Length: 259
Length: 336
Image 1: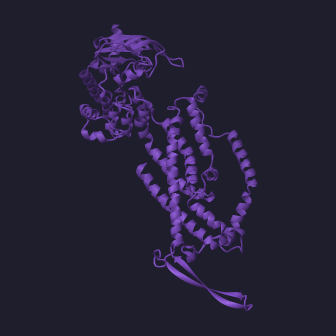
Image 2: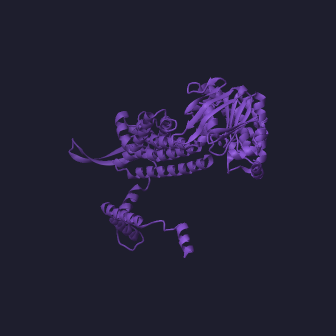
Image 3: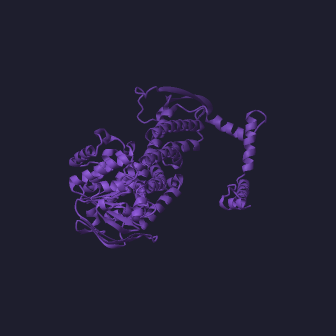
């Protein structure tokens, strides 16, 4: 479904975010991207829908190469979930969810805020599906808690039944319990639609629990690509170096001794 | 020894937040102020005002300022409320159908006239009928004030309509290219640079006396403000929701409508209310050059020395501005 061929990205200031990334993500896979901050996780995700243009290499979504010309057709098929939820805080939950369907709505309908009936019904259904009540529909997004806001973000991402969903650290600002709920919801929603998910995470335990496959980046290169069970503490300490994250700190000394 | 050396090496220093340079700059600024103050006679202003205050509390005999002000206020009062018109000057006058509250006054003039036959002076009595409307002039001023409010309202509407495209093309992140950005921003500066009174002078020549010139003058100047404020708010709006909509392929118009407008809307209301408020005050001023409304009436009366009429007009303007201030303050606290 997603093919990355020798992707490289160098920002104008000279930092190399990605280098020689080759990946193929088959349809329906829940693929988690791990790696320390600055490893290029976000950049990798953002090359898929053209928010970042790779300096070299080629990406294809469902066999269609991502170029400036094809982007307008590709973007509506890719849902995106953001770390900061990126909702319009002063708008209602309903409008936020419907905004996810904007590419499928004509300009004049969008300007008059007249969404077709099937989209409005779908938005209501999705709000219910992601675990919010009907009363939330007319509330401002700013009135919701972080977890609820991300639920709205998920509803927005799925309203057009995308074939690919990009989740850029969807739970980085949520507590562990809610993080788990949100990821479970994301996985359920994508399974139901057989959507391919590329999800970057910071929490190794969550990655191992939810992922079908883990890809780990270090300094812009793929350092690990395999099943969650193979992503053990040794691999983790290789990838995260000294900045090893929370849940693995205890396990690491023993593993090092063994290695 | 070692310890002190280390502490001075590692610890930071907390100097006063200003140095010699700051003091020099402040001194220079003070010098400049003193120089310009000399040129615009600040000293004389203070002396005259002081005299006026002393005269007002009775310490001094007389003062130029207080006697001048006294003369002005004295000629404004009593206010002219009624209207008195010679009946023969009213076209199609029907004495059986007088306007509300109006009555007819008959004035007799005694006049010495030379009779050409007898060549002697004779006294003749001339009768003139006047229609007196006790609140006539106040009503006239009220109508003019209402016209001024209409000019202000339409000036604001024109300003909003003009500034929407100016803001879109003048926002760096939405302008299609640098040329449109530059053109839009320079148009906005130009609009802002021309005061209403000046553009009204020329617009009166182009459109003739009356409200059109006033509406356009107000609209153009206010568009200079609104275009700038709207554009800057678009630029400063939080990019996160905009990115979310860009990522799924929504075009610029949709992104503005759904991700920018909800963010900037309260500010836009506040700016527009401010401009409306300002336009009401400015609409009275542009009338002075013939651009319609109460200002035109004011100028006309002032020029024929009808100072009690001027007094009525000033009081009505003051009351209107005061009431509108209250209303707009209430609106603002409710919607912003």
